[in-house]
Image (cartoon, rainbow, N blue to C red; front, side):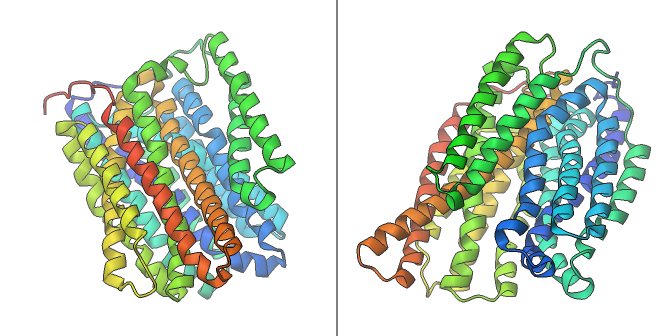
Length: 473
C-alpha cells in the first residue's frame, strides 16, 4: 500500500508525481486544442464535407467521455501507475497511427484509439496527485494541474497554426510522439507502484458497457441534435437509448458486489453538490468558447490570428489564478472560492451580453478576464473537494468523474447555446428582421441564458457539505 502522506519521502515524491501527471495533462490538452484548429485543413486534404470531418473530434470525445469512469475504476483495482502508463502508450500509438492515416475514416478510427488512451490518462491524473500530496496541499496540487491545462489551451492554437503551415496536418499528431515517449519514461521512473486495493474484486464489465452506451448516446445526441433536428428520429432515439442504458446501469450497479460506480458516493452531499455545480460551470464556460469566436469574427470582423490572440485571455488568466485558488482552498475550503468563481462567470456572461459591434478590445478583454478568473477560482477548489469526498479506494473513480462532468457539461453548454441562437434567429426572421441583423441579437440571448444557468449554479456550490478537516501543515 502507499506510504503515509505526511512522511518526508512522500513530500519529496509529490513533485515527481506532479511532473509525471503534468506531461500527460499537457499532451492531451494540447492535442485537443490543436486538432480542433485543423478541421478545415483536414476537410480540404481528404475532400470531405464538414459533417464528415467533424467526426475526427467527435470520435475522440465519445471514446474519452465514455471510458473515463470505467478506466478510473480499473485503476482503483489494478493500480493507478499501471493504467496511467498504459494510457500514455496507447495515446502515443494512436497519435502515430493518426499521423500515418491515409483516409478520413482511418483517421477517425485512430482518434478512437487516442481517446481511449486519453481516458486512461485523465482518469488517473487527479488520483495520482491526491495520493501523492498530503491532504493539506490537495488544493494546491489541483491548482498546479489547472495551470498545466491553461498552458496547453494557451499554446495549442498558436502552435497548431505554425505546425500546419510549416509541416502539414500530420505534424499535429507527430508532435505527440516525443512528448509521449518522454512521458512514458518519466512516469515509469518517477511514479511509485501502487498496490491494488483488493485483489479479489472483479471488473464490472456489464456496468461499464451500460455506462459507455449511456454517455456516448447522450453526447452524440447533444452534439448532433441541432443538425439533425431535436425532434428527429435519430436524436430522440439516442436520447431514449441513453436513458434506457442509464436505468440499466443503475440496476446493475445496485446488484453487483464491486460496481463500476459506487452509487453510495452520491449520498455524500459534498461529492454530489461539487459534481453538479461542475457540470453547470462547464456549461457556462462552453458557451463562451463556442459563442465568442462567432462574435469576434462575424460581428467584429477579426482575423483568425486576432481572434486566437483575444481568446487566449481566458486560459492565461486561469494559469495565474488556478494555483492561487487551490492554495487558498487548502486553508478555507472550497465553498467560498467555488461559489465566488461561479458568480464571476455569471457576471462575465451578463456583461458579454452587452457587447456590440463598436465594443473596444479593452472592453472585450475585461469580460474575458472575468471568465478566466471565475473558471480559475472555481475549478481547483471544486476538484479538490470531489477528490477529498471519496475514500482512497475510489480515487480513480472520482478522478474519472471530474473529467466526465467536464466533458458532459461542455457538450451540453455548446448544444444549448446553438439551440438558443437558432431559435432566437428564427423568431427574429419571422418578425420581419433581416437575417444579417439577427445574428448579433441571437448571440446576446445565448449569453443571457448561460448567465442565468451560471447564477443558478451558485446554489449547489453554496450548499455543499463540510469538507474533511485539513491535516496540520
